[in-house]
Image (tube, rainbow, N blue to C red; front, side, top):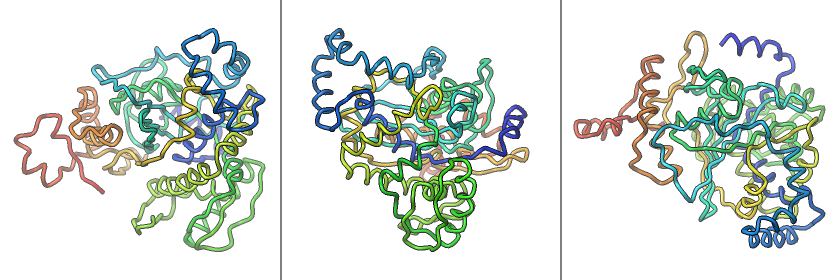
Length: 426
């Protein structure tokens, strides 16, 4: 923890924590949707569609595909692909199932900007993108940044700390390992995005309409002070509550709020960081709707605007994914259906441990089982022994125990060891 605090203190004056969890997916959709247009002279979506169809048809002829895409791939490999990424450094729990028909990608939103992009930093936004390749349905899982999980450092040692430290302590490989080993997943690829271009994206889509309280209006204006300084952009204060139209900079400030409650359309209240992520889900849904309504031409234009600025000196996005993998995802990501989003863990406590506030799952094993049901529809998933071991350690270390549902208490004697890990809904 001392290492982290020292790093934080050095950057405290200039650091902006743009914790916009679900909004990262909007960037991913725009980036992948326009990646095929990044280095090509084709200017409309139809040309991209025809071109991608031709490439896929001839994908078995690798030499043909290489000729068609050679110039684009060179620039992609130079400016977007993470050449230092080493998949062999990623850990996966033994016996974790490998399901066909799904693509899972880890998304990390980091607070670094421009030349700081490749330096060690926390990933304050952690999202698992779960894609059903057959249906085009996409589900998002936001892992709360303060969740206590097992993290692997670069030297191979493991510590229990906040999930957002995994990127700082072990790079992209360590952050993916954290997701795999704690959640029984088999993720191989990632996309990292910083937030320098976020306000431009929202503005390019025409801003967003939200319903804000007077307290939220107050905090938006407070966050705008720092956000203006960091981005060099300007936007006026928000002068009224109720249904308001927010610009990109104002929406960014709105999504950072964590000190006042958020109420969704049903009246349900979300507090603290849970309220912040709930705000982000609401904004994401509106942006996704606007992006899909805008059509492929506008999406491609916005994507090109971001990616044309992606250089070694000024970086917005990095990924482990090969050019061919991106090309294959383009048709799916243009026509995707965002079916649901959720925060993880489902059941949780927020204790202070040694003066530090954490999110602790009320039964990690139970929550992982619920996660696999959400991602794959598996209503009877049995977690791995490794996850059960982490589950037991968290209970002993934090004192946060599993909370059984009434029906679980009635059938406890007949449950298996794995099935006995339960929690409560909130």
